[in-house]
Image (cartoon, rainbow, N blue to C red; front, side, top):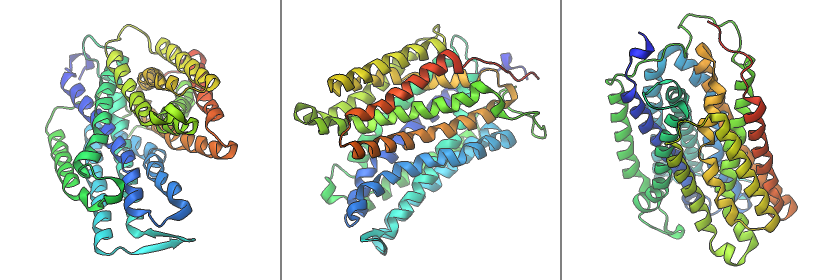
Length: 420
């Protein structure tokens, strides 16, 4: 079937919905850190914060572990089967969350780590986080290259990803409210009941299962030239494309600096004290709000090349971070969200350009870079403890922005394509 004869409007809308689901579940997992700490880690002692942050770490670990296997599934089974499998894995992950709550209520068995007492249910919850992260990896390895390649009339690849990014950011805004007011009914940390997840997660599992069934029925064509034939042995490695290999590092840096600012801006503000500390939570909220505004704006930008977008946004973000460090004003970091908002589609588009049959494998390789969301914020936290404050730790973000500028100017240049 000739790609030009296919109407990709329906599949594009499907990918936008799935990108919204990815945003919702990613932030949902992160928002469980505080309830997890309140419910499971009251007797964790000095390990309380370390064990709490492991929830996000295990989620992003799935991208590192499952990036390549997810790409292999696309190669063998195609886009539709991979999406259905991802949604079924997601149902299983949410089921493990419910199993954790059930085990905690029915047994309450614990293990000792040094002087800390940790419920077995906590480790079950971590397993659920990894499984949900696995589902997100399988979804992303399909959704992102599909958005780039499904040529909807009147749109560019960056514009399509920005539209999907806006859906993603909209759902990341809803997810904290869902956790606070739907799952835990506005309860404070002293009265968190982990059993509250049962009904909301049960409903969510049912909705996702229905979505998986619907995906088996709708028209979702594979896109010619983005995967190898099932029995075809490709002549080289996907890592032989330098713009893809350097793009994986760019994704690592981008996700890392995005999470660094989003997760740690409030800690920086509290460290400075005064009115900054009083507005710490507002700063974090406005940062993510800037991501949404930027993606909504970016969805209408179809004429600006991805390279130009990445050059401008990396410079602007870097200037804001450096200025914030110099004058010790975290409010400037809020504006970084506006520029981070359109980096992902720009990087992804540049990284998969010219990959042809290697596109699916390249997408899987790019998922490895998402692990930066676990590594860089963790390194920043260690650095803050080592030097006694957050002021100078933002140099980590500056380095990340500098690499993104390098990738836009030099690293993204295509030196090799898939010559079929």
